[in-house]
Length: 378
Image (cartoon, rainbow, N blue to C red; front, side, top):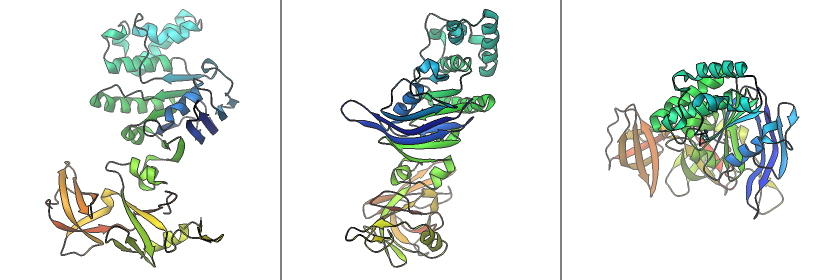
């Protein structure tokens, strides 16, 4: 297997659409990296550039110790697994898997040995003589994976390969793909719009929006410490609660809500250590985003806000709008000046719609963003 490096990648389509904008990314040897984002964010275009199916406007792509910009897909030593399995309908599963080796004149006994080896890995011996039309979706997916594996490429590129499977089969295949990657010690670049796939399979996740790489990190890092407002909104179900605030002295005050959070320990010290300077609009001097007048956004995950009755004063008073029991937890939405805040509690909580409740924010877990740049300050 090999490392993949993407350096200052730009792709501009005719008409001026900047689909990929200065993306820098490294996938280490043996890593499962997921490229995640909404439709149209540039993730598939990035993958196609790595594969050689799309020519980049500028930038370099390395696979191992080679720059592959000028190489055709066949010369890059990669295997591509598509959303649509692209199996040959007139060939059975054995023949579909063997096809890449037959095309390169590999001896018949070597082909047979390697097909059986792949069938062992994927547990598909019983279907090797069946044609695609008689296979289920999961079986077709395994055959497509087998055709990729048998080539023993340096890198696997996967473009939404589970999208066409039903929910139960998708869950099973997530586990199988992760196990397969570990067994082969494969370098995998995997594209999806589904954060469940990304969080459950990736060693790291690279999140894109509008052609720009927003953040790269482990699943826990991007969940707990989103680098931008986009990541905060996109990652998590429910997404992070975002409340406009400004700093007044050592207090964060809501700009459209009665929220007042005193910046006491343990929040004050990390804020002071990590504050950034931004240009002032009125002079050439620089000023901190924490200075008066800067618009900020407070972010808090649903599990980092505690609900109590009104006898226990908190940071904010709100009204319960809805209650959704979810088995091991309950999801509440509470109304605050026309804004809904989502909070998860243990299933024993018994607040009802219309109840007045107090919200208590875990100051060690909240995040603050600069509203102008949309970047995290803490």
